[in-house]
Every structure is written in structure tokens, then in C-alpha cells.
Image 1 (cartoon, helix red, strand yellow):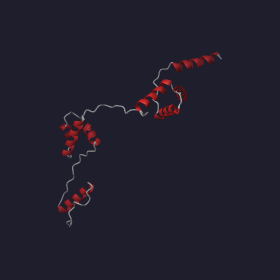
Image 2: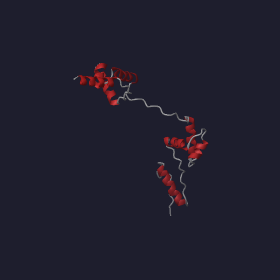
Image 3: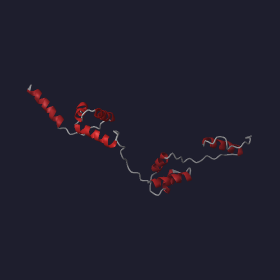
Image 4: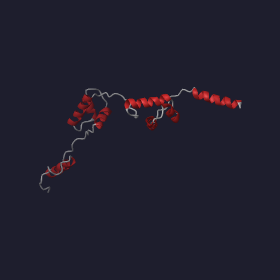
Length: 166
């Protein structure tokens, strides 16, 4: 019997003296805590119900009251090397020099940037570097090509000449 009591005490001592980082609370659990608090439960009762400390419950409630939400803020990443002005210059250059390479755009950039950075900027702004395709051939092919371009641009067949193709 004495050994059993000693084992229980040893386990309790270890449990109390372990210093580990607490796990983040799920949004669902935070929502339950806020719901229980708004329902009228005390913080101590909420802590007992969910197996948390009173301080944790208090922190969740305080954060909800201060920020109005239980969803965590977006964490900050690395700062961009490019200012919004630099991004605009890159976009203008890419649009003016349609079909130029990423390296050409990077060389024209006021700051030293990689081609991957240029690619990211262009993708983020849905800019295509593909040159406008040029028709190869006579007037008939030019009319067909123009009709296809107008259709793609949402202009329909309004601008297509009515000349016969043959």
C-alpha cells in the first residue's frame, strides 16, 4: 500500500514540475469558452469544465472583448524588398515591353532583384509577358485573326470587316 501511495505521489510530482509550452487553443474551443462566458458561467467554472487554467480562460475572454474576434491575426512574414512604387514600375515595364524576359525586367528594376521576385510580382498582379500573336499571311488571315482577338477581348464580331475570305 505504501508503494502505491509513493508511486502516485511521484507521478503527481512529475506532472506538476514539468515545464512544457502550452498548446494553442483551437478556434472551436475559444468559441465554446466565449459562448459559456456569455451564457453566464464564471471563468472558474469554464476553466474546470474544459480543463484549463483560469488565466487561460481570462486571456481568451479579454482578447475577445478587446479585438471582437477569436480568430488569430495573420502572422507577419518577411518584408518585401520592393516598395509599391517599385512594383508599379515593374508592372509598367512589363506591359510596355510585352514579351520581354524576366531577366530584362529585373535589369530594368531600380533595385537588385531576382527573376523569381519579378515572377512573383507579375503573378500577383495577373500580368502575362506573352507577346500579342501576329498574323502570318494575307488579308483573309488578318481578318480571321482580328475576329479571334476581338472575341477574346469581349468585343464580339462588331469590328470585323464583312469582306469575303475567298
